[in-house]
Every structure is written in C-alpha cells, then in structure tokens.
Length: 92
Image 1 (cartoon, rainbow, N blue to C red):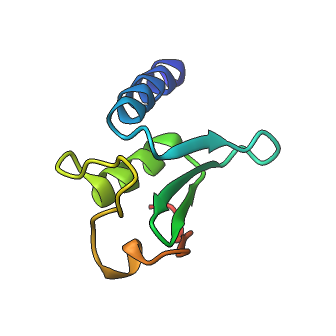
Image 2: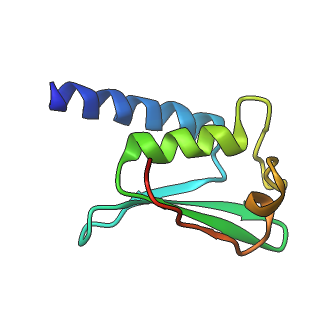
C-alpha cells in the first residue's frame, strides 16, 4: 500500500503546484526531507518536513484554497507570514 500512498501524494503535489506556481517544493536527495519555499515581498518562508503529505498538509493550512499566490505575500497567521521565518517544527 505504501507505493499507492506515495503516488497519491505526488498527484497531490502536482495539483498544489498548479494552484500555487510561486511556491517552490523539492526533495533533498541526500537526507530525503521535503522543503517548500513560499516567496514573500521581503524574503520568504521555508517549511521542512520528512514526509511529502505532511508538508502538503502544512502548506494547505498556510495557503488554503482562498489564497492565490502569484507573488503576493502569503496569508495565514502572524508568525507564519513573517519574512524569512523558518518553519521547521517537528512532524506530527
């Protein structure tokens, strides 16, 4: 079942990228973690998670469907929208 779960997350990643083309998401090949960079007018926010699904869950919390991301500041709550904030809290 693991392969099907990963395939589902990759499809979800493609949908997210289509909705939020300004957000850069990549996987570190050495350590295997996933990282997203959300551009802001004064820098950006970096979010790191070991699982793609957990990363996408966090991005959905921050950006949601109501937040378009064509170079504008990310919506969300206070500290998450702080330019240069590195959101590396432990995975849930």
